[in-house]
Image 1 (cartoon, rainbow over the protein chains, first blue to last red):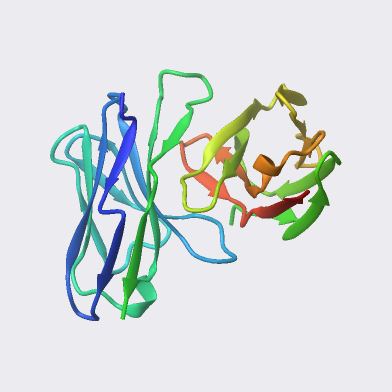
Image 2: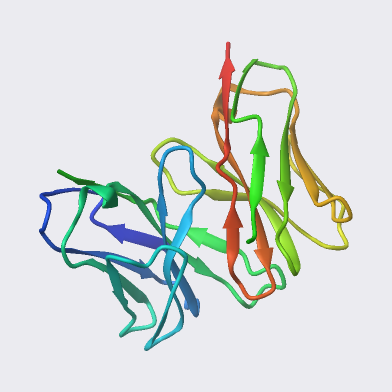
Length: 114
Length: 111
């Protein structure tokens, strides 16, 4: 099993450009999350999904959109990138089958917006 | 607002020594508390998960404690190794599957 994978690993964008980050999981988990991690701060939730076809806003959703057309994929889109979106982005899934619902993270995508 | 505060922000220890990291939280209603290890350039990996009724849990040389009354947790690393150099993140989960993350403690182990 690959677990949680993220594509791409690195990306440099110019202000105003758009891009899509892909998160894929092969564990059949219902819940998927997108976080951003910035220096000196804890991971902050951008958007999440509790199942195929559903999405919800997290703590810092502005400037991002998401889609969950297939259960195994969760896409994060930046419509018009800004330097403030320079960050490391992590995707995560939750196994609700466990009482403590273990959370699994992808390896991250490092995005720089110039 | 749910908050998770970790201390210290960073620490340096010599190989073979022990250290303890602290976590205070205000998350409510509480479901469970996790400690994650995050190596540089990698995603966080779970070390321990404790529910309300558990006050200690071990994973090898890592031992986590939880005092749900005072809303405090600690992570103790015994006989540190160079591979323990990483960021350690305290994460508290509410009962709606939303998680609150601390900023992490960066541990550097030196030979």
